[in-house]
Image (tube, rainbow, N blue to C red; front, side, top):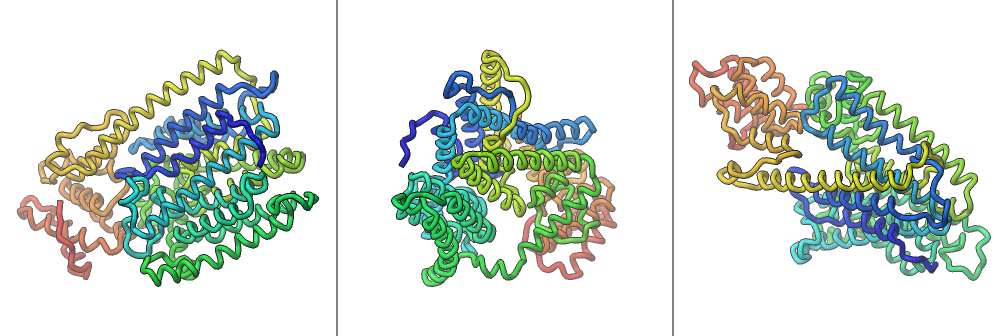
Length: 606
């Protein structure tokens, strides 16, 4: 194993990219808040560590100030500013938080690039070692959490493992609250294990043990992307490493030589092919009630939902081709377009495809800019890192490109880069590979002042985010009597608190006009069945019965199966009012719709 001096940047990288993936606390209204807050806090600390480190040798600092690829988050940030300048409202507050995330991503890019440019080749390789260690530790501990969830032992882990609360078709998610996320972490870890084996950190038995455990986690997650794409990319990386290892002396470790790495690629594929049915059989024998990934692949049902979402994202782009619908508005735009698009889709805040999501939210301006920036970046990386780079640099570049390919593949079907614990490593990898920069370097004193200001502002944002989330979280779990006395958030999540207040307020004809604006704003956060029905009732009470009917008509495009409950609740609301105060035409329409066969409804009203 190579001897590496433990460096502060390497340690900071391991902590910053491992710990957020292991946070087990998930609460409403934002299940991933604590993991993402941790990622943000550690990301700020990482930027500070990278900014304050000295070069390996005098004069080794980069001759340019910023990496070209940092134009990616900066371009999107400028697009959001243009959206605001054009008069596009930010009802949910998502535009501001998006701007802060993009700014943090740009800061991570600058720190990573300047650090890499000031390091020797050996030290750059040691940073890649740190990245690999971060991913493999996160993957192995996440898989351990999955196996704890298999046997329902979460309550015996002192809160270190997230509770898995579904009883059937179980897709274990470790501590990430989303099984596909854990599968992606495991995919990153599979490639990391090969790199660490070629570098001497792992001998063959340790590599084999880690690989089989990680692949078991992918099977437990039920992720089709993990099963096919991530394992396939890891095997491809093993073959690339084998090609680059040609000519290695016979006395070297098997994982340093071409035959051993080819065998590793075969083991990766054979392992997952054998493990999927093996774990499935064990699940049936021991009543684990696991999700059947292969059957789902054969049915293709999930892709039909994805296709519906993609159709709606394209419809948003066609309706708003220049600047899109804006960040935080996808769900509301999706609901508004239901009658025109005529497809049934799951309700979402994202398009489940990174490119279509950009087109829908940032329009052609944002999407084209990002595509051009990343395409130019890829050309520079291939030209300078792969074609012209030394052997060690080519190996590290191949690994980082495989990691980025895994994140990109996941992003074509979901939205992992909307989470800080994936977005910040993504930014780091892009910048680490960037061979070119722009701008004159700042004087040391100016750079130090900028770094201190960045840390101070970030600390203020993080502190207020924590305080305000705890306030809105408390409202989510409080009783109706106690909720009234709870303090409201001051700076962040005010829209969530306002939506919570709106949904728990009793509707009367006299209060309808005053309650309607808050309900319509709450629909922008996410149109839910209860909120749609309450908003329709308020519109009817305020005289806009045609619009009220339109809201209820759209309900069937998203919530088939819940229409009966909502129409029954509206029918009871109509019956509760006297004939003189009742919106007659709307109530007549509701009764007709209910009698046409919406079924028997569950009890519940306002």
